[in-house]
Image 1 (spheres, rainbow, N blue to C red):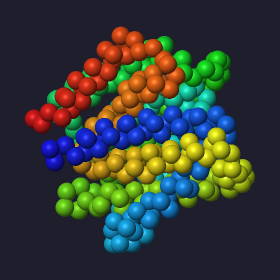
Image 2 (cartoon, helix red, strand yellow; image 1 turned 90 degrees about the vertical axis):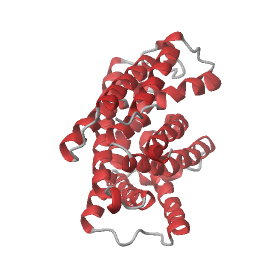
Image 3 (spheres, helix red, strand yellow; image 1 turned 180 degrees about the horizontal axis):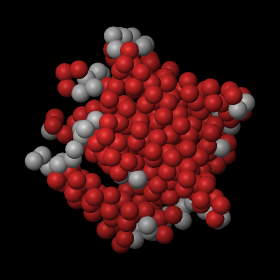
Image 4 (cartoon, rainbow, N blue to C red; image 1 turned 30 degrees about the horizontal axis):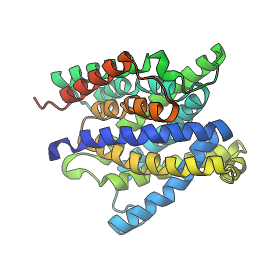
Length: 306
């Protein structure tokens, strides 16, 4: 069982991010995607530092090589600041399900980048599992009934802008995945996942803070927390997303191939099926069921050690 720590961490991350995505998208409808992304990181960083202090004895990780710190910082800025900023802008415009469809391209991007940067090569079973799981996710996301929970009538311009932002978010996540693994290391030189997360989150938060200050919207974002319909979803999204979710994702990245971790986290739309059913009464179709079963088979193939 311990051989599959990374895979189980990735699966759990997807579940946490399914709830976090829905909450963030709902809050973003009231105050905008930028405020959501800025608030979640500003709140998450001190929480993570306190957890690091309780668990590892210090608020800030020590003894990290300059090179490792640099790669993790770049990873945090690219993935958590720029990537998430594009992703949340996308789901605010076109909804969490369509946004998740575009983010489903991140595993393929990660696989290509991991091959170039990390020299990671997937085995035959893993490659087959990656393809089968991607097919299952695509079947779920292609279901028109699954998108009814987002009631806005999307214009062509909204779709185009949302799609571009979603793809940029996927690219940011892919780059963040690879650079994070490059900085955190593997094997005997591997650093504690929580330490890696704190370094990444610090860089991501500082990046978001600088962008918000330059664009003059920090005050507006902070004032958004006064609104009750925003405060609750944001705080819960912080717990599920950039704290528990990102921490588990770091475990997944360090304990398995970067592309495998990315595809497991992309199971978020699979989890959104029952959530949408409970929250919105969305009908569960045979296509959604078929896609879910296909994705589960793909996960099983990903876990074959050969």
